[in-house]
Length: 309
Image (cartoon, rainbow, N blue to C red; front, side, top):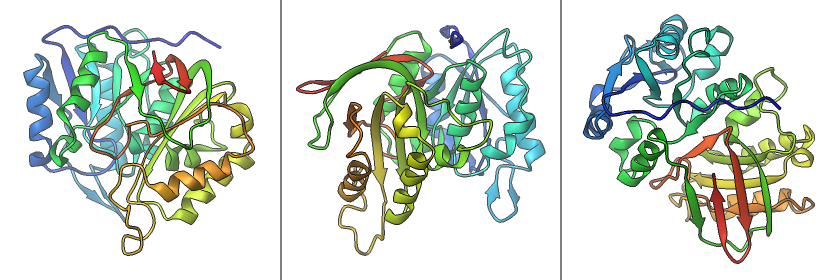
């Protein structure tokens, strides 16, 4: 395995590009997040098409060409030190075959996002670059904790996370070291069989999701199983599972860690013996511990549970 490249730590005054690679956003939705960036001593630089709109069965932040243009600018402009996605939604897959890393390779920079941004993070890891699975700018206006963003800024400034996690009765005990991969389950599933899919061999996989019917969750897990993913990975971290099933029937619909979704995952994993940590606070939920995709981590599951970078 080639060495993974980690971007340099940001110094105060560094420029952070804000781009919209998928769904469209309104200016008001980004106000709090942009003020956070300024408050931490960094300069947000807005992509040309950040607030563009293009409707084609979905409200995208511009045409594919416009979104590709903004991301390639952010990746390759030497004045930019990090790239932060405004939101997820849908549309990042459109960009994968058109991303240019010529200057990025000489000056790697952190890419920050989650959800649909999982596909860009998988692309970066395929090219041996680490990225941050953390909250987008838009979610700062939805009540996500300030600490979720403070932890991202800590990583940007060179700190390595070390998280202690509350026990869950579905956990499978064990200790393992390995490279962290993953993100949103629906996008991990969507990339299976493509050149952009994660390499699962001996990796520690993180999954989270939102708004899926239970049968759809099971279908994605079955696809991972049929693709041999669960025979390859060395550990699993399960994050937020929220707004799952039918809102009318699910009393846990608003919970961060949906009970029945967790039971389904546990059932599918019953025959595997790798360490599994349920209840990691990352995903479409209000408190998030950012993860570094591509980093080597130590996963401890037992009397004490921890994820250390």
